[in-house]
Amino acid sequence: MNKCVFFVIALILKSNVDSAKILAVFPMTAPSHYFLGNALLRGLAEKGHDVTMISPFIENNPPKNGSYRDIVLTGFMENFQKLRKEINIFDMEKANPLFLIPLMVKLMLEMSENTLQHSNVQGLINSDEKFDVVIVEQFNNEAHKAFASHFKAPLILFSTIGASSWVNPLVGNSQPLAYVPEPLLSYSSEMTFNQRLINTIMYSIQQLCFHWYLVPQQNKLVKKYFPSNLELDDVLYNASIVLLNSHPSLNQPVPYVPNMIDVGGFHVQPVKKLPKDLQEFLANAKEGVIYFSLGSNIKSAEMPVEKREVFLKTFSKLKQKILWKWEDDVLPGQPSNVKLGKWLPQQDILAHPNIKLFITHGGLLSTTETVYHGVPVLAIPFAGDQKLNALRTVNQGYGLSLGYRDVTEETLSEKINELLTNPKYREMAKSKSKSFHDRLVKPMDMAIYWVEYVIRHGGAQHLRVASLDLPLYKYFLLDVIVSLLIIILVVLVVVYIIIKKLLCFISKKKIQKEKIN
Image 1: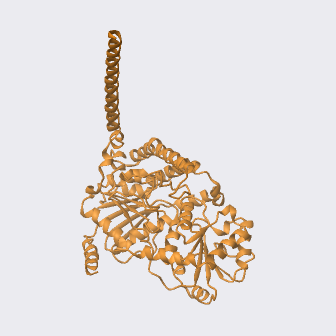
Image 2 (image 1 turned 180 degrees about the horizontal axis):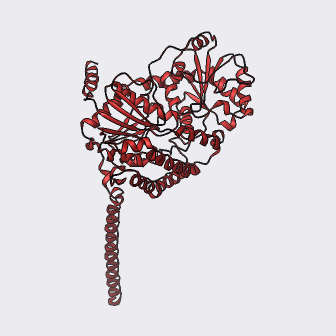
Image 3 (image 1 turned 135 degrees about the vertical axis):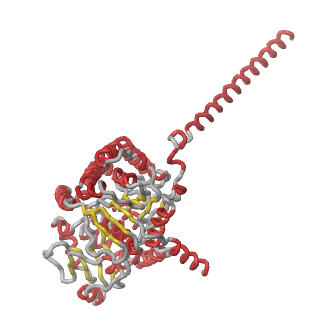
């Protein structure tokens, strides 16, 4: 025990470096992506570093230590709101995952260019500033990696969904398709033949699209918006480390190369005191409270009336109170046991002992927070990795899943009652929470340590695996396989000739013997 304590103290003390200048690029308009980037940058600033964050959001309460600067992508959120009106998120559940690949590529190319051509970003690119490390969110925005080359700084990638085909090839990590599903597919690790076939096709299409279309297009953006004569290939496979928003207790255990670091849960903050009205609502609920939120991107207030009525009628029959994240001023037909909130402190709510169930869209942040606090889940997924997260929730035994199209009074009531009355879900949720917390080092300390490690070791190239420099024929041992096949073929031919000659010899002897007789 004393050795463990000494190791933790030594690790934390060793992570201290002089104040470094850190640039982070988190251009996604989804608040959940920003929450992760902001939490990491705040943690680094509080350690005394000078951080600069490119994003569509503004930090209104910067940390007191270090230095925190925003380079705001003005106009991004307005464009995002227009896009949201064009895409009905409640219909996304029916979308074919194969059709999502070209849509994502199109949107990410637009986002990448809009970021690089933004006047605020161009001002930074054409400045004489220096940075010690560049952190880029990995989300098909490959051109943004050129910030590292431009500023002659090591590159750190951040993956919001953990290890996947979107990041594995960039660091030479293997992805066995037999048991590692694509993020957009709602498959478990135990896939049927058809699922393995679809998984292989999905992966192949995604990789072809990435290498033959996305990367060349992103390289054009690098040449267009960076003044130096940069090539995307110089940095594309040169990330020092990848910080993964994952943990084996929450995500599927998969192979990792040495520079892939799990920091899932680092964004979870210490529990704060709830506002008076919420505290009283939760404390006075004798039968407990069900918390209902569809996250930051999906608005319950935009739900079709027929589905909204299903939730209202189901909730009105429950003896538990309902705390509902509702983005409008009024909820028509609001039952007496339902309390609304346009914005709710989710982490602090989930930490309250009177929360009996969390009804969620299955986003990774919400899933992480409910596991952190040990609360059972009813996941109603819509798009992205939500279906995969929901499936893991069911497979790991701390919740149930219900497709949005399948939501009726009967199905919703059945799932809720099962989760509330069967103690196995809460017991498993508490067990998962215990596993999630059982770490040698807190995830935020781990993230900070590895960022500073990269700075201390000038990019930490010793963590980079050799497979990144191998041509495909060497990586897949094609030359070895061909050589072995040739050797086997030669041996078979020689054996065939020897046997043929031997048989001929025996046949001649036999004929001669017959003549003599």
